[in-house]
Amino acid sequence: MISLPFRRQTQGSIVTRLYGTIVAQARSPYFYADYGVPDTVLGRLDMILLHLVLLLRRFGQGPEALQAMGQEVFNLFCRDIDHNFREMGIGDLSVPEEMRRVGEAYYGRAAAYEAALAAGDGPLAEALMRNIFGGPADGAPKLAAYVRECVASLSAQDIYSAGEIHFPDPAAIAVTQSVTGERS
Image (tube, rainbow, N blue to C red; front, side, top):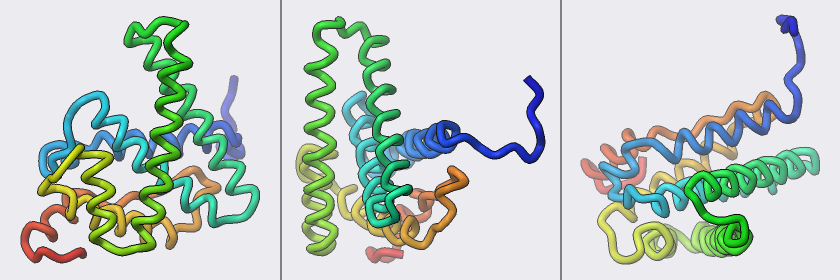
């Protein structure tokens, strides 16, 4: 098939790019090396969930078409996780139960992060400690600052229809946190 230079992107390719950006950001080594996020399958899933929550939170504040695109991103996430479970050797009969757990994790974290974002930095760091770190962690305040920076950055972006979003650089926030103790 010949690709024309001015061809419009399909909704599917936009959704794929958005989800790819989430996954790429969640895999940033800074989260695991500098922030102390557990470098495990669950730790990486938690980082994907965090970025998915942040993006879908922003999409939920937009018009109906943007909300529909957010649903497509969520659907792609579910298909990807289902595929990964199967690749990891989880049997066909167990995959639905694992997907139910992932769904509960997403919705529970979305509610916790939304409430924490409304309440301030302390509750956000606590929610992150509970959900991502599994207990007290020095990296939770850094991650809370990163999350707040993400919220600000995503709310300022209006290029979602192109399938391009930009998350803040976690390395820059980690350096700012460790030097000044304040959010950048």
